[in-house]
Length: 256
Image (cartoon, helix red, strand yellow):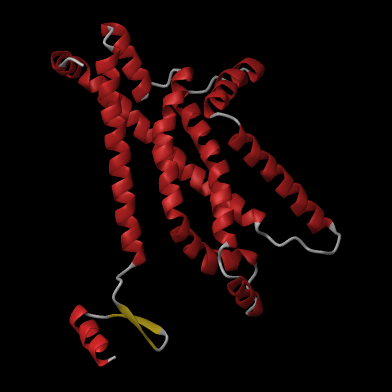
């Protein structure tokens, strides 16, 4: 790798790399947010208790669960690059739907992320102690109130690392969207390398940019996780949680 060529490529095409990185972050961020909302909705729906008695409600819930399961299995079982080709070019050919490339990219990332997040959310809901569901039912809460007031606040904290992992994966996986000519980082890097025929240096710069983005996002998410965890030095006082000062904690430990 030539340092001279690296500096030349950066000086001549720096804004192209920056624009590509910006589009990559934009698509992956919006796609992850929308996909997480889709996953939350599907996770809540798929955990609605199905009545034992036969009836319209049981048939309806089974039908909905079947459709959602098919959606999850299809988008988890096929590559995003194939999904991009089918959704962008296939819909244009079959139904004459001409989508904006960036809109199509966000749609593809969102529905793909939603399929993965649905199973993550479902697993997070099922990991909550069943006693909390029973207690909510005992005071007259329905499924929606139980989820919004008791279960989901805990689930969101528990699945935050997995959600962050999906965001990082989406930053890297947006590179496949070059097949529908979305001008993200990989597409712009390929264009730069095609102009100067210095593939090693050009994609070396892209590697650094991908690493900077994923590393920064990971650190920000870990900071948010720590903030959501709250302080480690707390004691239980009646029904309230109180923060304990370090010097008080030391005194209490000596007394013990």
